[in-house]
Image 1 (tube, helix red, strand yellow):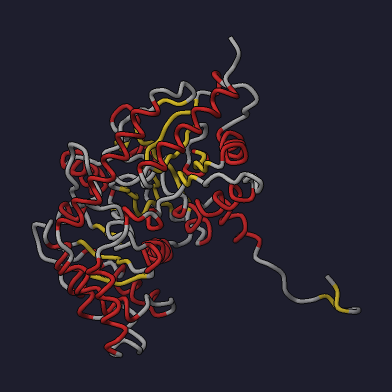
Image 2: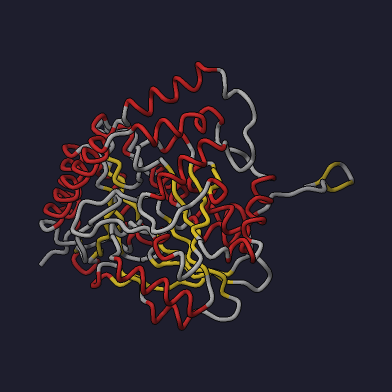
Length: 418
Protein backbone atom coordinates (compact mmCIF):
# COMPACT_ATOMS: atom_id res chain seq x y z
CA UNK A 1 0.00 0.00 0.00
CA UNK A 2 2.16 2.86 -1.28
CA UNK A 3 1.68 6.53 -2.07
CA UNK A 4 4.40 7.14 -4.59
CA UNK A 5 7.59 6.52 -2.62
CA UNK A 6 5.79 6.80 0.73
CA UNK A 7 3.56 4.22 2.40
CA UNK A 8 0.12 5.22 3.65
CA UNK A 9 0.00 5.45 7.43
CA UNK A 10 -3.34 3.71 7.95
CA UNK A 11 -4.79 0.24 7.72
CA UNK A 12 -7.94 -1.56 8.80
CA UNK A 13 -8.46 -2.95 12.29
CA UNK A 14 -8.66 -6.60 11.26
CA UNK A 15 -9.83 -7.72 14.70
CA UNK A 16 -13.21 -6.10 13.99
CA UNK A 17 -13.84 -8.41 11.03
CA UNK A 18 -12.93 -11.43 13.14
CA UNK A 19 -15.23 -10.39 15.99
CA UNK A 20 -18.21 -9.60 13.75
CA UNK A 21 -17.94 -12.92 11.94
CA UNK A 22 -19.14 -14.80 15.02
CA UNK A 23 -22.24 -12.68 15.59
CA UNK A 24 -25.73 -13.79 14.59
CA UNK A 25 -25.87 -11.03 12.00
CA UNK A 26 -22.55 -12.12 10.53
CA UNK A 27 -23.78 -15.71 10.07
CA UNK A 28 -27.15 -14.53 8.73
CA UNK A 29 -25.35 -12.51 6.06
CA UNK A 30 -23.49 -15.65 4.95
CA UNK A 31 -26.78 -17.58 4.71
CA UNK A 32 -28.44 -14.76 2.78
CA UNK A 33 -25.60 -14.76 0.27
CA UNK A 34 -26.18 -18.49 -0.26
CA UNK A 35 -29.88 -18.26 -1.19
CA UNK A 36 -30.91 -19.42 -4.65
CA UNK A 37 -31.91 -16.16 -6.35
CA UNK A 38 -34.00 -18.12 -8.88
CA UNK A 39 -36.19 -19.72 -6.20
CA UNK A 40 -39.46 -17.76 -6.30
CA UNK A 41 -40.89 -19.28 -3.12
CA UNK A 42 -41.31 -17.20 0.02
CA UNK A 43 -38.20 -17.06 2.16
CA UNK A 44 -38.99 -18.61 5.56
CA UNK A 45 -36.87 -16.84 8.22
CA UNK A 46 -36.35 -19.31 11.06
CA UNK A 47 -32.96 -17.89 12.00
CA UNK A 48 -33.49 -14.59 13.81
CA UNK A 49 -35.70 -13.15 16.54
CA UNK A 50 -37.53 -10.36 14.74
CA UNK A 51 -41.17 -11.25 14.07
CA UNK A 52 -42.24 -7.63 13.55
CA UNK A 53 -42.80 -8.15 9.81
CA UNK A 54 -45.67 -10.56 10.47
CA UNK A 55 -49.12 -8.99 11.01
CA UNK A 56 -49.96 -11.23 13.98
CA UNK A 57 -46.96 -9.79 15.81
CA UNK A 58 -47.84 -6.15 15.18
CA UNK A 59 -47.05 -3.98 18.20
CA UNK A 60 -49.79 -2.38 20.25
CA UNK A 61 -51.43 0.81 18.95
CA UNK A 62 -50.55 2.31 22.35
CA UNK A 63 -46.90 2.25 21.31
CA UNK A 64 -47.61 3.66 17.84
CA UNK A 65 -49.67 6.51 19.24
CA UNK A 66 -47.14 7.30 21.94
CA UNK A 67 -44.38 7.76 19.37
CA UNK A 68 -46.60 9.88 17.09
CA UNK A 69 -47.60 12.07 20.02
CA UNK A 70 -43.99 12.46 21.12
CA UNK A 71 -42.91 13.55 17.64
CA UNK A 72 -45.82 15.96 17.13
CA UNK A 73 -45.34 17.56 20.54
CA UNK A 74 -41.97 18.98 19.40
CA UNK A 75 -40.78 18.48 22.99
CA UNK A 76 -38.21 15.86 22.03
CA UNK A 77 -36.17 17.42 19.24
CA UNK A 78 -33.24 18.07 21.60
CA UNK A 79 -30.28 16.04 22.80
CA UNK A 80 -31.17 13.86 25.78
CA UNK A 81 -29.01 13.51 28.89
CA UNK A 82 -26.47 10.74 28.39
CA UNK A 83 -28.14 8.59 31.07
CA UNK A 84 -31.57 9.10 29.48
CA UNK A 85 -34.63 11.28 30.04
CA UNK A 86 -35.75 11.26 33.66
CA UNK A 87 -39.46 10.39 33.04
CA UNK A 88 -38.40 7.43 30.89
CA UNK A 89 -35.92 6.19 33.50
CA UNK A 90 -38.54 6.54 36.22
CA UNK A 91 -41.04 4.60 34.11
CA UNK A 92 -38.57 1.74 33.53
CA UNK A 93 -37.81 1.63 37.27
CA UNK A 94 -41.52 1.46 38.10
CA UNK A 95 -42.01 -1.24 35.46
CA UNK A 96 -39.26 -3.43 36.97
CA UNK A 97 -40.36 -2.72 40.54
CA UNK A 98 -43.55 -4.69 39.99
CA UNK A 99 -41.53 -7.90 40.28
CA UNK A 100 -38.96 -6.92 42.93
CA UNK A 101 -38.96 -7.12 46.75
CA UNK A 102 -37.23 -3.71 46.93
CA UNK A 103 -37.59 -0.45 45.02
CA UNK A 104 -35.38 0.76 42.20
CA UNK A 105 -35.13 4.50 41.62
CA UNK A 106 -34.58 6.37 38.38
CA UNK A 107 -30.92 6.75 39.43
CA UNK A 108 -30.50 2.98 39.05
CA UNK A 109 -31.64 3.06 35.39
CA UNK A 110 -29.55 3.99 32.33
CA UNK A 111 -31.16 4.08 28.89
CA UNK A 112 -29.29 2.50 25.99
CA UNK A 113 -29.54 1.98 22.24
CA UNK A 114 -31.30 -1.35 22.59
CA UNK A 115 -30.02 -4.21 24.68
CA UNK A 116 -26.96 -4.55 22.44
CA UNK A 117 -25.56 -1.25 23.66
CA UNK A 118 -26.30 -2.31 27.23
CA UNK A 119 -24.05 -5.33 26.53
CA UNK A 120 -21.38 -3.08 25.03
CA UNK A 121 -21.41 -0.72 28.02
CA UNK A 122 -21.31 -3.59 30.52
CA UNK A 123 -18.39 -5.37 28.86
CA UNK A 124 -16.46 -2.12 28.39
CA UNK A 125 -16.91 -1.17 32.05
CA UNK A 126 -15.75 -4.56 33.34
CA UNK A 127 -12.79 -5.04 31.00
CA UNK A 128 -9.38 -4.61 32.64
CA UNK A 129 -6.02 -6.30 32.02
CA UNK A 130 -6.11 -9.94 33.03
CA UNK A 131 -9.84 -10.04 33.80
CA UNK A 132 -12.20 -12.76 32.60
CA UNK A 133 -15.96 -13.21 32.30
CA UNK A 134 -18.05 -16.39 32.42
CA UNK A 135 -20.45 -16.87 29.51
CA UNK A 136 -23.09 -19.56 28.87
CA UNK A 137 -22.67 -22.17 26.15
CA UNK A 138 -24.84 -22.06 24.13
CA UNK A 139 -25.41 -18.35 24.42
CA UNK A 140 -25.70 -15.06 22.57
CA UNK A 141 -22.47 -14.56 20.58
CA UNK A 142 -22.50 -10.78 20.87
CA UNK A 143 -21.00 -11.21 24.35
CA UNK A 144 -18.00 -13.06 22.88
CA UNK A 145 -17.61 -10.46 20.15
CA UNK A 146 -17.63 -7.53 22.58
CA UNK A 147 -15.37 -9.33 25.05
CA UNK A 148 -12.84 -10.00 22.28
CA UNK A 149 -13.05 -6.37 21.17
CA UNK A 150 -12.40 -5.20 24.76
CA UNK A 151 -9.64 -7.77 25.41
CA UNK A 152 -11.70 -9.41 28.15
CA UNK A 153 -11.10 -13.16 28.36
CA UNK A 154 -14.26 -15.22 27.85
CA UNK A 155 -14.63 -18.54 29.66
CA UNK A 156 -17.61 -20.79 28.99
CA UNK A 157 -19.80 -22.83 31.29
CA UNK A 158 -22.24 -25.34 29.82
CA UNK A 159 -26.00 -25.29 29.99
CA UNK A 160 -27.43 -28.76 30.60
CA UNK A 161 -30.03 -29.81 27.96
CA UNK A 162 -31.43 -32.68 30.03
CA UNK A 163 -32.18 -30.27 32.90
CA UNK A 164 -34.02 -27.68 30.84
CA UNK A 165 -30.74 -25.98 29.88
CA UNK A 166 -29.95 -25.07 33.50
CA UNK A 167 -26.55 -23.60 34.36
CA UNK A 168 -23.86 -26.13 35.27
CA UNK A 169 -22.95 -24.47 38.56
CA UNK A 170 -20.09 -26.91 39.27
CA UNK A 171 -18.52 -25.77 36.00
CA UNK A 172 -18.97 -22.13 37.01
CA UNK A 173 -17.09 -22.72 40.25
CA UNK A 174 -14.32 -24.60 38.44
CA UNK A 175 -13.85 -21.82 35.88
CA UNK A 176 -13.79 -18.85 38.22
CA UNK A 177 -10.62 -17.42 39.74
CA UNK A 178 -9.49 -14.20 41.40
CA UNK A 179 -9.67 -12.38 38.04
CA UNK A 180 -13.27 -13.34 37.24
CA UNK A 181 -15.54 -10.29 37.21
CA UNK A 182 -19.00 -11.59 36.31
CA UNK A 183 -21.16 -14.35 34.91
CA UNK A 184 -23.88 -13.86 32.29
CA UNK A 185 -27.33 -15.40 32.71
CA UNK A 186 -29.79 -15.15 29.81
CA UNK A 187 -33.33 -15.78 31.04
CA UNK A 188 -35.70 -16.47 29.32
CA UNK A 189 -33.12 -18.26 27.26
CA UNK A 190 -31.68 -17.32 23.93
CA UNK A 191 -31.00 -19.67 22.17
CA UNK A 192 -32.62 -22.45 24.23
CA UNK A 193 -36.16 -21.27 25.01
CA UNK A 194 -35.57 -22.11 28.67
CA UNK A 195 -37.17 -20.36 31.67
CA UNK A 196 -35.35 -20.76 34.98
CA UNK A 197 -37.13 -21.50 38.23
CA UNK A 198 -36.89 -19.33 41.34
CA UNK A 199 -34.86 -22.06 43.02
CA UNK A 200 -32.30 -22.32 40.21
CA UNK A 201 -31.87 -18.55 40.02
CA UNK A 202 -31.33 -18.43 43.77
CA UNK A 203 -28.60 -21.07 43.46
CA UNK A 204 -26.97 -18.99 40.72
CA UNK A 205 -27.04 -15.92 42.98
CA UNK A 206 -25.56 -17.85 45.91
CA UNK A 207 -22.81 -19.30 43.70
CA UNK A 208 -21.90 -15.86 42.35
CA UNK A 209 -21.82 -14.44 45.87
CA UNK A 210 -19.51 -17.26 46.99
CA UNK A 211 -17.18 -16.47 44.07
CA UNK A 212 -17.34 -12.70 44.64
CA UNK A 213 -18.62 -11.92 41.15
CA UNK A 214 -21.62 -10.00 39.86
CA UNK A 215 -24.41 -11.43 37.73
CA UNK A 216 -25.21 -9.86 34.36
CA UNK A 217 -28.88 -10.70 33.81
CA UNK A 218 -29.85 -10.50 30.15
CA UNK A 219 -33.64 -10.28 30.35
CA UNK A 220 -34.45 -8.90 26.91
CA UNK A 221 -37.04 -11.72 26.59
CA UNK A 222 -38.43 -11.05 30.05
CA UNK A 223 -42.09 -12.11 30.50
CA UNK A 224 -42.18 -13.81 27.07
CA UNK A 225 -43.11 -17.12 28.70
CA UNK A 226 -45.80 -19.68 27.88
CA UNK A 227 -44.85 -22.88 29.71
CA UNK A 228 -45.17 -24.00 33.33
CA UNK A 229 -42.42 -21.74 34.69
CA UNK A 230 -43.20 -18.05 35.27
CA UNK A 231 -40.54 -15.44 34.60
CA UNK A 232 -38.54 -14.50 37.70
CA UNK A 233 -36.14 -11.56 37.28
CA UNK A 234 -32.61 -12.05 38.57
CA UNK A 235 -32.95 -8.74 40.38
CA UNK A 236 -35.12 -10.53 42.96
CA UNK A 237 -31.82 -11.82 44.35
CA UNK A 238 -30.07 -8.44 44.30
CA UNK A 239 -29.68 -8.54 48.08
CA UNK A 240 -27.62 -11.76 47.71
CA UNK A 241 -25.40 -10.65 44.82
CA UNK A 242 -25.12 -7.42 42.80
CA UNK A 243 -26.98 -7.71 39.50
CA UNK A 244 -26.76 -5.67 36.32
CA UNK A 245 -30.08 -6.13 34.56
CA UNK A 246 -30.19 -5.70 30.78
CA UNK A 247 -33.50 -5.30 28.97
CA UNK A 248 -35.45 -3.43 26.32
CA UNK A 249 -38.86 -3.00 24.72
CA UNK A 250 -37.61 -4.71 21.55
CA UNK A 251 -38.97 -8.20 22.12
CA UNK A 252 -41.94 -7.88 24.46
CA UNK A 253 -43.40 -4.98 22.47
CA UNK A 254 -42.12 -6.40 19.12
CA UNK A 255 -40.28 -3.20 18.10
CA UNK A 256 -36.58 -4.16 17.75
CA UNK A 257 -36.01 -1.38 15.23
CA UNK A 258 -36.88 1.32 17.77
CA UNK A 259 -33.55 0.66 19.49
CA UNK A 260 -34.22 1.48 23.11
CA UNK A 261 -33.17 -0.58 26.10
CA UNK A 262 -31.84 -0.23 29.60
CA UNK A 263 -29.00 -1.13 31.91
CA UNK A 264 -30.10 -1.27 35.55
CA UNK A 265 -28.18 -1.59 38.79
CA UNK A 266 -30.34 -4.11 40.69
CA UNK A 267 -28.29 -3.80 43.83
CA UNK A 268 -30.05 -2.69 47.05
CA UNK A 269 -26.80 -3.06 49.02
CA UNK A 270 -25.04 -0.42 46.89
CA UNK A 271 -22.04 -2.61 46.04
CA UNK A 272 -21.98 -1.48 42.40
CA UNK A 273 -21.96 2.14 43.54
CA UNK A 274 -19.18 1.59 46.10
CA UNK A 275 -17.02 -0.32 43.63
CA UNK A 276 -17.18 2.48 41.05
CA UNK A 277 -19.11 0.42 38.50
CA UNK A 278 -22.02 2.88 38.39
CA UNK A 279 -19.69 5.84 37.80
CA UNK A 280 -17.91 3.88 35.06
CA UNK A 281 -21.27 3.22 33.38
CA UNK A 282 -21.98 6.96 33.41
CA UNK A 283 -18.51 7.67 32.02
CA UNK A 284 -18.98 5.16 29.23
CA UNK A 285 -22.38 6.65 28.34
CA UNK A 286 -20.71 10.08 28.11
CA UNK A 287 -18.73 8.87 25.10
CA UNK A 288 -21.50 6.78 23.51
CA UNK A 289 -24.47 7.46 21.27
CA UNK A 290 -27.91 7.96 22.86
CA UNK A 291 -31.30 6.38 22.11
CA UNK A 292 -33.49 8.61 19.96
CA UNK A 293 -34.98 11.33 22.16
CA UNK A 294 -38.56 11.10 20.91
CA UNK A 295 -38.62 7.34 21.58
CA UNK A 296 -37.43 8.09 25.10
CA UNK A 297 -40.23 10.63 25.34
CA UNK A 298 -42.76 7.96 24.37
CA UNK A 299 -41.53 5.37 26.88
CA UNK A 300 -43.72 6.37 29.86
CA UNK A 301 -46.89 6.15 27.79
CA UNK A 302 -45.79 2.87 26.16
CA UNK A 303 -44.96 1.17 29.44
CA UNK A 304 -47.78 2.61 31.54
CA UNK A 305 -50.64 2.26 29.05
CA UNK A 306 -50.01 -1.08 27.32
CA UNK A 307 -52.68 -3.51 28.50
CA UNK A 308 -52.18 -7.08 29.65
CA UNK A 309 -54.40 -8.18 26.75
CA UNK A 310 -51.63 -7.30 24.30
CA UNK A 311 -48.98 -9.26 26.20
CA UNK A 312 -51.32 -12.24 26.60
CA UNK A 313 -52.04 -12.24 22.87
CA UNK A 314 -48.32 -12.31 21.99
CA UNK A 315 -47.58 -15.09 24.48
CA UNK A 316 -50.51 -17.13 23.17
CA UNK A 317 -49.21 -16.83 19.61
CA UNK A 318 -45.75 -17.89 20.78
CA UNK A 319 -47.27 -20.85 22.66
CA UNK A 320 -49.14 -21.97 19.53
CA UNK A 321 -46.02 -21.59 17.40
CA UNK A 322 -43.86 -23.45 19.95
CA UNK A 323 -46.36 -26.32 19.98
CA UNK A 324 -46.32 -26.49 16.16
CA UNK A 325 -42.52 -26.50 16.21
CA UNK A 326 -42.38 -29.23 18.84
CA UNK A 327 -44.88 -31.48 17.02
CA UNK A 328 -43.35 -31.05 13.55
CA UNK A 329 -39.83 -31.72 14.79
CA UNK A 330 -40.93 -35.17 15.99
CA UNK A 331 -41.45 -36.12 12.32
CA UNK A 332 -37.98 -35.04 11.17
CA UNK A 333 -35.51 -37.84 12.03
CA UNK A 334 -32.34 -35.78 11.53
CA UNK A 335 -33.09 -33.46 14.47
CA UNK A 336 -33.99 -34.13 18.09
CA UNK A 337 -35.36 -31.73 20.68
CA UNK A 338 -33.78 -32.03 24.16
CA UNK A 339 -36.27 -29.72 25.87
CA UNK A 340 -39.55 -28.17 24.76
CA UNK A 341 -39.30 -24.36 24.77
CA UNK A 342 -41.11 -22.46 27.53
CA UNK A 343 -40.08 -18.91 26.70
CA UNK A 344 -38.33 -16.46 24.36
CA UNK A 345 -38.62 -17.14 20.61
CA UNK A 346 -36.21 -20.04 20.03
CA UNK A 347 -35.54 -23.72 20.43
CA UNK A 348 -32.26 -25.61 20.22
CA UNK A 349 -32.28 -28.97 18.45
CA UNK A 350 -29.52 -31.52 18.00
CA UNK A 351 -28.50 -32.36 14.43
CA UNK A 352 -28.03 -36.10 13.86
CA UNK A 353 -25.39 -36.17 11.12
CA UNK A 354 -25.30 -39.97 11.13
CA UNK A 355 -28.74 -39.97 9.48
CA UNK A 356 -27.61 -37.71 6.62
CA UNK A 357 -25.49 -38.05 3.49
CA UNK A 358 -23.38 -35.27 2.04
CA UNK A 359 -23.73 -32.97 5.08
CA UNK A 360 -20.49 -32.11 6.84
CA UNK A 361 -21.66 -30.16 9.87
CA UNK A 362 -24.32 -27.73 11.10
CA UNK A 363 -23.04 -24.83 8.97
CA UNK A 364 -23.04 -27.01 5.85
CA UNK A 365 -26.58 -28.15 6.70
CA UNK A 366 -27.85 -24.56 7.01
CA UNK A 367 -26.11 -23.34 3.87
CA UNK A 368 -27.58 -26.16 1.78
CA UNK A 369 -31.01 -25.76 3.37
CA UNK A 370 -31.01 -22.07 2.49
CA UNK A 371 -29.99 -22.76 -1.10
CA UNK A 372 -32.34 -25.70 -1.71
CA UNK A 373 -35.42 -24.71 0.28
CA UNK A 374 -35.22 -20.93 0.94
CA UNK A 375 -35.41 -21.67 4.66
CA UNK A 376 -32.95 -19.97 7.00
CA UNK A 377 -32.00 -21.66 10.28
CA UNK A 378 -29.10 -20.60 12.48
CA UNK A 379 -26.28 -23.16 12.83
CA UNK A 380 -25.50 -24.01 16.43
CA UNK A 381 -21.86 -23.09 15.84
CA UNK A 382 -22.97 -19.45 15.85
CA UNK A 383 -24.19 -19.79 19.45
CA UNK A 384 -21.45 -22.08 20.73
CA UNK A 385 -22.97 -25.53 20.08
CA UNK A 386 -21.54 -27.32 17.04
CA UNK A 387 -23.94 -29.64 15.26
CA UNK A 388 -26.98 -28.13 16.92
CA UNK A 389 -29.47 -25.78 15.26
CA UNK A 390 -31.33 -22.78 16.65
CA UNK A 391 -34.83 -22.54 15.21
CA UNK A 392 -36.97 -19.43 15.62
CA UNK A 393 -40.68 -20.15 15.98
CA UNK A 394 -41.69 -16.48 16.32
CA UNK A 395 -43.20 -16.11 12.88
CA UNK A 396 -46.70 -16.45 11.42
CA UNK A 397 -47.80 -20.00 12.40
CA UNK A 398 -48.77 -20.86 8.81
CA UNK A 399 -45.30 -19.77 7.57
CA UNK A 400 -43.71 -21.81 10.36
CA UNK A 401 -45.55 -24.92 9.18
CA UNK A 402 -44.38 -24.33 5.61
CA UNK A 403 -40.80 -23.88 6.75
CA UNK A 404 -40.80 -27.07 8.81
CA UNK A 405 -42.38 -29.03 5.94
CA UNK A 406 -39.56 -27.82 3.68
CA UNK A 407 -37.06 -28.87 6.35
CA UNK A 408 -38.62 -32.34 6.33
CA UNK A 409 -38.39 -32.47 2.52
CA UNK A 410 -34.73 -31.43 2.74
CA UNK A 411 -34.11 -34.32 5.11
CA UNK A 412 -35.86 -36.67 2.68
CA UNK A 413 -33.40 -35.76 -0.09
CA UNK A 414 -30.32 -36.04 2.11
CA UNK A 415 -31.30 -39.03 4.29
CA UNK A 416 -28.73 -41.78 4.43
CA UNK A 417 -29.81 -44.75 2.37
CA UNK A 418 -30.47 -47.90 4.40
